[in-house]
Length: 192
Image (cartoon, rainbow, N blue to C red; front, side, top):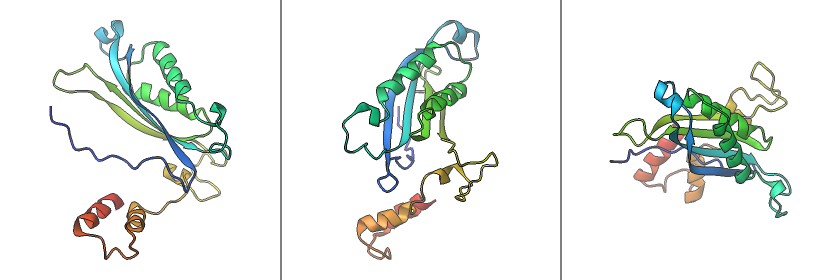
């Protein structure tokens, strides 16, 4: 099977905003999931991927202690307990519940969850859903706006320059003139 060329989202790790990227890749479990009668009586293979943007504490870089970080072992154990808690009809519901579990830790600012069913179609590797959810900060009101002027979930994280500016800095050019045509096309694609 030919792999699709998928555009990947920007990574969560961000030194300027003291965010680290905690992830779980390709966690395969047996789950009771689905709306069809055969899915309610037989467990099926699913794959879960988690990406968490985690606010680093002041001691995170100096103290070599598990209490200072979001522990991926605890995250995986929570997901396993969720799967074992009973039948779920929709992958969307499972993804929402998994995101909510991850966001219970106040250090987690963003949770991206992908849930895939692996054995639905013989000619497809998987089917499923990917969601991204943001922590609700204490200063946010029910209207979705805040005293700091954050009106969208993406505003929860500190403002960072667009990818184009970041890459221009990495290439060592301020005006973009020393960037090749191919690099310019890539920069333009990232700014969209």
